Structures are given as structure tokens and as C-alpha cells.
Length: 327
Image (cartoon, rainbow, N blue to C red; front, top):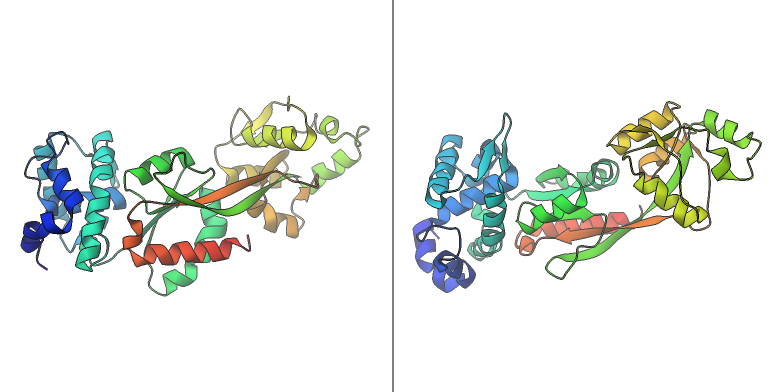
């Protein structure tokens, strides 16, 4: 079906989109061009005019011109131009939330996949460390079979907001999203472990108060990813039933950096087991404590409404669900 006939038949085939374009309370112009909205959503999801162009079968200058036209029609700047790519503005997040579902539904009816583009990448997001250690290795076979992935790393709250706006298809979240607007399912339980280098472990074991691990750790530097020690405080509360009173010796907002510092002998930390498992297995790190019930954090796989119009989203979801049983 050509794009002109798509526009003519839009009202009968996608009432949600027809109502969206006809609603004067929306930020869209009264006679919004469906092609411009498709281009907008491709740029929004890919984060770049250049990356969106081949998905749409257009040249990069054409994509740029169409976004400029839509910005003129809406009277809003939709993207902040960066040295590499673009950053959606608040009006862009709002617009994406309005049009993503109807456009995906229309593309599914046309049989062309999301946006009816030449390719249909799956947009996946989650915590950086988990993506590297668990998720990408699990999805490697699908990539070898032709799956296209666009991966974003970040914290759960902003990623879920972007998911609501249509920027991601799937988000691996460290908590279940509130409300019922987003479909989510438990993916895996992540165990947290108290670790240090073998040298520090020996010093703790030889400490005069070694029978009281909390006391023996008072003179050991604490390495953490945030000043308020969220992971370590939770470990102390759940495992020892005490409040952690230590101050961080090193804070760095990246768990890989925390792992690197601890492995080099900077001190101790509480880390996800998946992140430091290889280090524990090879003896480069030592586990300082093995509680009967270690602290767990449930990971959730959250899907954007309408994302299953792309069959590759279902493939990714099924593959992650199967792989997570062994995490």
C-alpha cells in the first residue's frame, strides 16, 4: 500500500491515529503529515538523523528536512542537535507518547513492521553492567541470525519514562513499574555479595574482632557507586540487622569501576554476583560473607505497549526469559 492511500484509509484502519490528528487539544498541527510523524518516531528511537535514514529508506538530508518541517508545524523544537546524534526535548517525549502506539499499529496492519521501514531494530535498554555481562551475550545468537539491536544503558526511572514515550521496546528494570500501563514480568533475581581482594580478606580474618564482621570491616575502605551507599546499606540492614555507619572511601558512579577498584585492593564493596562471579571463580576476589539468605533484587522485563507488532521484540523477550533461568 502506498503512503498516499495509507493516508486516505487511515481513518478506517487506525481510529486511534485519526482521533489523535483530529484532536485540537494535541500539540500536533491540524493537518499533520503521517510521513513526518514516521520520520520523527524513527529519529526519536534511533537517537540520530543518520541512523534513522536507512530505516526509512530516505537520505539523511531528507530526514533532517522533514524534522525541521515538523518542528515548524508544531512550533516546538523536538530535538537538541549534539556533536553525535540528537537528544529529544520534553515536547518530543510527549509527542512520541502520543503517536508511537498508533503508528506501530498502522505499520503492523501494512505488514511492514514498525514504521514500515527497511529494517526493524529492537530498542532495548537496561543497567549497563547487566547488559554487558548477561544480556548481550544471551542475545548474541539472535544477532548472528540477523536481529538488529539498538541498546541504551541507564537508570530504571529515566528508562521507563523513555519507554512510555516510545523510545524503547523493552527495558530491563530494577523494580516493577507502578500502575498497569506497562506490561512487565519478573526476569531474574540478582544476588548481592560482600567482596574484597584476597589480601583484605586475610586481614579481616586475622582481625582481633573477626567474629564480628561489621567490627572487623571498620578499618577497611568502602568502595561504592553513590555517596548514600544504597546497596551496602541494604546489605547491612537485611543481613546483619544493623545500620551501616561507614563512610565511603571511594565513590564512582559505575559498578564496573567499583569492581576494578576493589579488585586492585582499594577496599571492600557489595556488588551484584553476576558482575563479580568470574573474579570470585578465579580467586581474584574473595567473598567475605555467605549468609543463608543473601539479599536479592528482582529484575523485571518491561515492554512498551504495541511493541509486539515487531516479531523480533517477541524473539528478544523469549530469548531473555529463557536465558535468565540460568542467571
